[in-house]
Image 1 (cartoon, rainbow, N blue to C red):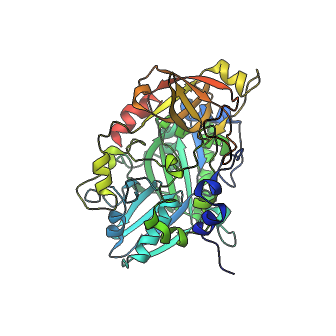
Image 2: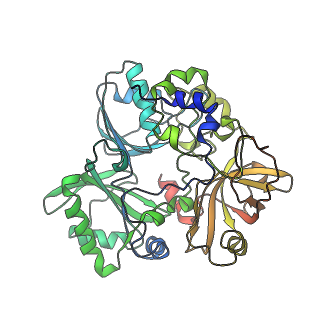
Image 3: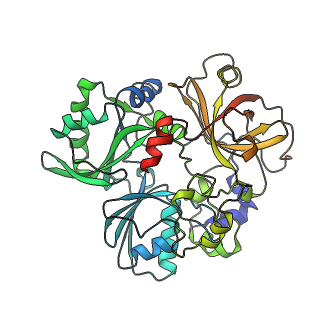
Amino acid sequence: MTTPSLQDGIDKAGSPIGLLWKPGAEPWTPEVVAHEYAGWRTEQHAWHEGVALLNLSHHMYDMWIDGPDATRVLADYGANNFEKFAIGQAKQYLPVTKHGLIVTDGILAREGENAYLLSGVPEAQHWVQYHAEQGGYDVSLSTDPSTAFRPGGGDPKLFRYQIQGPLALPLIERAFGGPIPETKFFHSTPVAIEGRTFSALRHGMAGQAGYEFIGPWEHAAFVHDAFLKAGEPLGLVQVGALAYTTPSVESGWIPSPVPGIYSDPELADYRAWLPLFGIEGKRPLNGSFFSPNIEDFYVSPFELGYGKMIHFGHDFNGRDALLKAKGDESLRQKVTLVFDPEDVRRVIGSGEDPGFVLSYARNRVEGSSGLAGVTMQTASIDPVGTVLSQTLIDAAHATPGTQVTVVWGDHPGLGTDPEADLGFPRIRATVQPSPFDQHARTEYRRNA
């Protein structure tokens, strides 16, 4: 029996929106990891005020790209600067379509002269793999899916643990018996604990100091236990799946934008190559903003704040479209919406504390004259005392302090007028910068 393709699913559903629109869809949270260890509020406070341990080992896809043409295929289909990309460095990889639309970013680490590891949401890996195979590039590709989608189950090839927060460096010194080598931002250095060798990637989340430690799975339990032991006197808190999803709302990263692949006739072969039951066919859309046209959900890398990462000094797929879009004042801007706490309790909590809120819904954001933007990810941030939302909004409403309203609800989809008044409640919100966290917005971004 032939495995159905993404194109098969679109054809059967009648349109990309017919396939993807799923009102009431449950928001994604990482697989395998417990939802909470100390409670999501305590876990959020840990990386703001103390130190937190996060387990990224199970929900990320990894693809190794090796061979003489490894750099060439990545540069041909990504907008990054490969002229300045050191071995041991990592970058946010920006694959784009011919029309300059984001496919979905990933973390690309250069492990050798012709060797890379691409990690994250698998749309980026699929994009690179397809073009590497169809374009006849001299590369070898190997993939390790996330634990929930790994054929036959089994363990990951790599462990990934993050140590984050103001006390991250003291914990690391305790675990390693002293400070680890000074490392540039988003560069890695080899480290070891009792003969177990792995790597430390320097970065942070929500503006806090930290490292991500990556190594072979055979050392996973030992390294995890070593961090727990070293962190006990410092009040180390393990972070569960709920709290794990929320730092991006403060740090300004928008996860999993809709890839711009569903409507371009020139990508019909790509859609026929992609499996229906992959992320491109199963990541749902929902919210109060509805359009029957999937292109209304596409996103430019400029809107995501990736303009400084785009390198026009090389020829790549989508270069001409991005050059044309550069400086386009009609593009939306990325902002943080701070929800009014009283409205959050009234609308989401029915007058009580709403508890944990997480949504990837595309909700309408309205100004005085109607639609002004759309939410991309929304979550409770207990240290802030309310709900925040990463949002794309038109320039006229992007000034910090601007008052807007968020329409909270799920449009039923096809068959109902996109502009129908469905009686959804409104939540008042205030526009603030993105990233919301000041350190993430200044020092962290400057280092990036």
